[in-house]
Length: 175
View 1: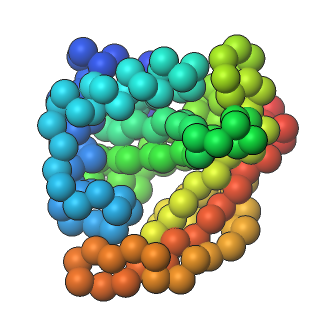
View 2: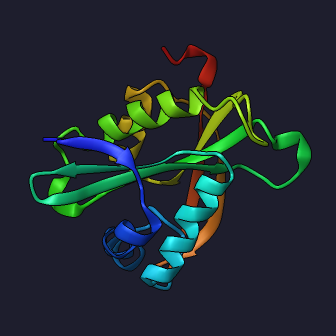
């Protein structure tokens, strides 16, 4: 059960967040990254998101950090400034307990509250999902994302070609 949702700290959380993320790099196609990352890289990524005025949220439970979610710029071209992408990663031991939904609810609430910075106001949130991934599709659709398209065989990981589906969330619908 989620005990607390809070802002990530690059200095305090990077080691644990890298551990969670590296599991997915090494065993799953949820990320197309193929080389594990260290805590300095994770700290830099957290800081970059926060420096852009976007949320990076950590969920804790009785055992400590159990997952995280963040928004990031969707694309570097100026016309995309009001569109962000999002990601959520849950520790393998904490899956199936509603943590992903709690993280997304908080992340989407915080994205809707972005009123300053280069991405304000955020208009839409895009999630990219490597397919097949029934659990991720179910999570995204349960919080209001809608499938808007699929690109066939654009990634290669673990010696197989992977499709990427795009899911979109209209931030104006966030309470």
